[in-house]
Image 1 (tube, rainbow, N blue to C red):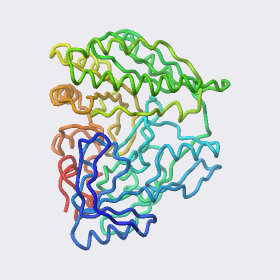
Image 2: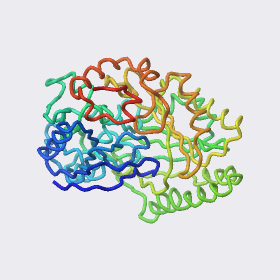
Image 3: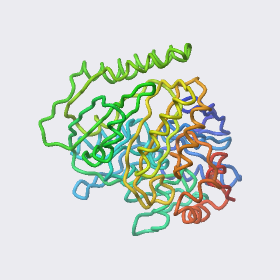
Length: 436
C-alpha cells in the first residue's frame, strides 16, 4: 500500500486539506488496515473519490484514502443482472465495462467522472420520474466500519445497515465493494430543443410523465429553457457525427461557454447579453447508447448548489427563483438545471419518502456566489428542500433532522458502525451532528 503526504484539492478548487497521511490501498485488507491504524491512534479517516463534491465531505487532517488503485470489477452476473465493483471504480470505466457485456445502468447523472462509492454516498442522480438516484440501484455492499472490521449487508443481511449506508455521506463507513443492479443495454432517442420557459412550466407534468428522462435548463435573463427529452428506443442507432459531438459538447458547451464565463467574470454587465446567445443552438435529435447520452464532458469549472424539493413544488420554485434573480438584479451566467427523481426509502436520501424535483444553481469559478446561493436557499427552505450532500449549502443537523423521516434511523446505524467518530470531519459534524 502506498502512503504519501500531499495537499489535496477538490475539482472546483474551493475545498482543500493537508492530511497527515494519504493512502492508496489496492485491496480490502489494505483498506481495513488504514482504518485500524487510525482508530488505534484515535485519528480520523476520510475516503475521497474524484473530488467532484463542492462541500468539505472528504476533508481531513488525518488519514485520506484515495481508492484509485482499488477500482476493478469483481464479477458480473449477467443472468441476474448484477455487477460487483470495488469502490474506486469510476462510473465511466464501469459504463464501458458493462457495455461490453450487453448491460447498462438504468439511469445516470450528467457526468461520469465520479467513483462509484462517491456517487452513491452523496445520492448522485439523473432524471426520470420512475427512476431513483444511483443509490437505489445498490443491491449489496461490503463496508469497513470504525474499528476496521467488515460488515457485509444487503436487503436480507444486515438490512438496517444496508438501508442507511447506501447514502451515508462517508460518515457510516468506507465502502469496499458495491453490487449494483443493471439492465440489458439500451439506446436512447434524444431530442434537445429550446422552448419558452413559461410554456414548459405550465405543462411540466406532461413533459416529465411523457418521457423516460426529462430535464430542462432555464437560461437566466431570457424567457428560454433548454429541454432534453430522452426515451428508450428500438430505432436504429443514429448517433451524432464525431464533428457534431465535438461541436456541441466541446466547442459550444465547454470552450465557447467557458470563454463567455471568463469574459462575464471580468465584465459582469455583459452577462445578460452573453446568456441570450445560449438558446440559439436549435433543435438536436439523435439515437445513441444510453451512457453516452446521459454523461457529457465538463471542462468549465464552477460552484454548485442543488436542492431536492417535493415534485409538486418544482414549477413554483423555478418561478420564485426567476422572480428573485430579476428583483435583485443578479447577473447569472449559468443556466438553472431542473431534474426529476422517484421517491425512495433510504433514510438520508434527499428523495426519501417523496417524489422529487431537483433544482441546481451554479456560479462560475472565482465569482462571488454568496448572495445568489443564499437567496436560492431561502426559497428552498420555504418548501422543505433537502440539499444534495455533495453541493454547497448552509444547513445544519438541527435544520435538516425535521426534513428527513428516517433521520433517527440513520443516526442509530451511524452510532453503531462508528461510535468513536473515526469517519467524522467538520462537514459531517455540522450536517449530521457529532458522534464519539
